[in-house]
Amino acid sequence: KYHGQGTYTFVDGNKYVGEFKDGKYHGQGTYTFVDGHKHVGEYKDGLGHGQGTFTWSNGDKYVGEFKDDKIHGQGTVTYSDGRKYVGEIKNDKMHGEAKFFNLNGSPLWQGNYVNGKLHGMSREFYEDASFKRTDNYRYGKAHGLSRLFYRNGQVKWERDYKDGKRDGITKEYYENGKLSKDGLFEDNLGTAKEYYQDGSLKSETLVEGGKVTYIKRFDSEGNLVLMQKSK
Image (spheres, rainbow, N blue to C red):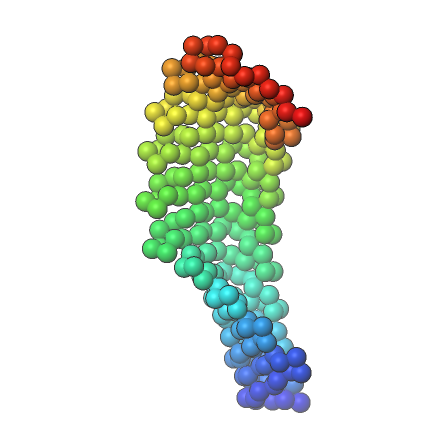
């Protein structure tokens, strides 16, 4: 049985260089995959276990904890474009509080995962760290109130979701805070109205399955200028 420092090259081209114990990878080592991936770090009983670094062939890199050959624990993923993820990963899936950062280190997004699925509130930020968007999720599906903000902090739109579908009140605003659209939805079915800056009605639409199926448009004087039903 292999024991101590050594190199083992597989017939498929993969290669391990490092410490062995009783014929298994055990201790510090480097496993290089033929497709360009590489795992450098601690091994135990033939599996990646402990602190390590995994680099994908596209340049993405994870630095953190491993357990039984899976990414597991606190760690940091640095993407090839410079963005960075900091958080917990459980059995190769994002789990717990997570944060993404821009190239300059400013926050880009923060939220929570449960076994790889978004769960709870998430927040997205502009480059100056002001709020850009807030969402609520339940086990990977939008559930609750979502809001998008203008750069001046004014709400651009707010929508209610239930199990990933539009459900409840939806409102959109001009940058000056005046209402531009509103509607009421249930299970992706609903009606919406659009308004001119002076508050007069601009259009009425019927939405079914997330698609507009009927629309009426009015000019600024209140005259009907279009009435159309989609096929």
